Picture 1 (cartoon, rainbow over the protein chains, first blue to last red):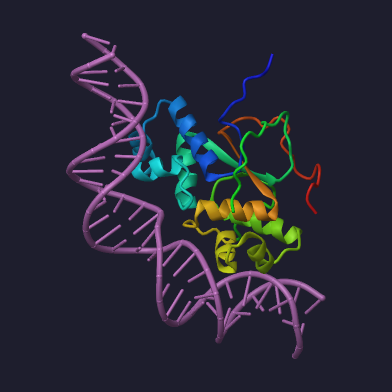
Picture 2: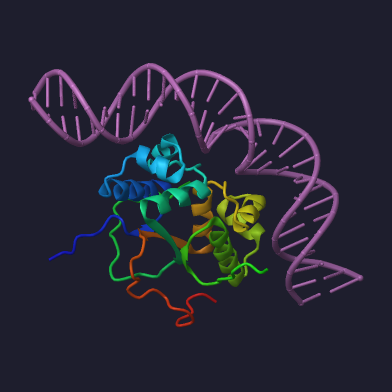
Amino acid sequence: MMKKQNPEYGIIRSTEELGRIARAHRKNRHLTLETVSGLGNLSPRFLSEFERGKETAEIGKILKALRTVGLEVVIQPRGITPPHQFPKNERKIDE
Amino acid sequence: MMKKQNPEYGIIRSTEELGRIARAHRKNRHLTLETVSGLGNLSPRFLSEFERGKETAEIGKILKALRTVGLEVVIQPRGITPPHQFPKNERKIDE
DNA sequence: CAAAAATATTCCTGTACAATAAAATTTATC
DNA sequence: GATAAATTTTATTGTACAGGAATATTTTTG
């Protein structure tokens, strides 16, 4: 009886993961890039690139995008492990 | 007027809060900008600006800076009640 | 499944500003 | 007041961003 792990919740290790979560959440809400664009005053192009993990996207716009789709950001010291942690399949830190 | 000073970890709503948390954490670890710069291959200037809440800092570098000082980022749907989120002054992980 | 519709991505242009190093200057700490 | 630390300055290089158009992809529907 494995609990289904929610992809909208978790520790972010890369811009790719961040974007993936943002996109998954947006899709769950049935929002289009255009809609979020209008709601958040962000270009669809920016949103598209952000959700695909653009490393150089600007933090201010990202925070706005996340807020617009209903996500929030938590900062915590490394090593706090809530209930259960994801197994890590891939390991692609950076150079 | 003094700005709101919230040295706690937790939900961040602005780049200013993000930077403040990062700086507080770095200071608690007795790390200088120069040190973090060396450890993370980030310019001291970037770090300085990031910690002061620069809106246009790049997400990739920010994630690297956070990781370098020992912080992690959690993304979650807005409004969830933290199961056991570190309440104030209960347990000092850091320091 | 293939056509149509809806979404998402890419291209082009111009503006604005981020990134860096190194040095200078200010601020904090002892 | 001396030193360490942080911020700013100068000069240069590079690219993020938006808008609109074109293209591609995904999803819907017959």
